[in-house]
Image 1 (cartoon, rainbow, N blue to C red):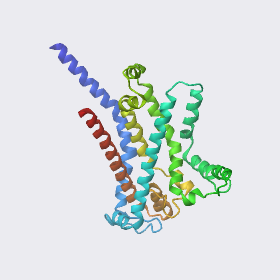
Image 2 (cartoon, rainbow, N blue to C red; image 1 turned 90 degrees about the vertical axis):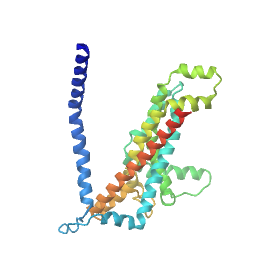
Image 3 (tube, rainbow, N blue to C red; image 1 turned 60 degrees about the horizontal axis):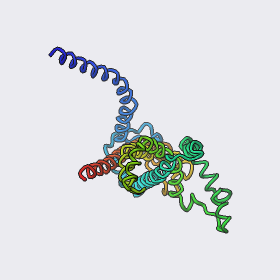
Image 4 (cartoon, helix red, strand yellow; image 1 turned 30 degrees about the vertical axis):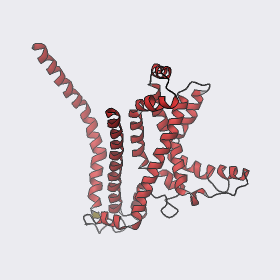
Length: 302
């Protein structure tokens, strides 16, 4: 009886110690995330334009109503979703292929890993400048050079194929991120499991479908969840490569927030767009988690 009481007291003290240690971290997170969001929410219900600093008044949800009344807003939401989903799908497929290839031993594997990881280490603005001027420039870019080898005319990619160009650029940068997480998951899979399945007659596709993919499910969830949150906030590449154009073809929510805040100086409307961006991110993440959990439940039932 005494031992049980002692064990309970020790467990209680350990829980209190954990709460005490984690309290500063939670406090810092609240200060740097929730308090700014509360101010953003407050400003979104006001009419505050820096061009008219003395004319600030409470207008309620009018900024949100004006956002949905704007015919360009739905197009901006669509651009945000297309950009995010396209990049996530491309990076997942290509990252999975590279992870499977790098998981096999071959000569020069260390050099190959370093080269494939390097795009993720390049800053977003540098990535955008590289693709815009070195690769996609219609006058002297490498894409134009390769087209000339086949007798094809140069193409102004950012004028005619702006969104695909931005998607490819961002996917090039984020593929190493997904690849690294999936590669870590593959290296945690015991070789004995694959060898046993191979001896039982499983081919390459069966190994991937029934052993590798279920083992990587947690790693896939982590990689794609983190990537979705980052891709929804993409700004630098769009700013440097297209400035949201042609027209609004590549304008997403973060770039629209920038235009409202620093080109039109409408702080309140920018705050409303920021709140909508947070709501959109939460909806996308919840849908993503629901899909993954439904797949887990279906597999458990099977």
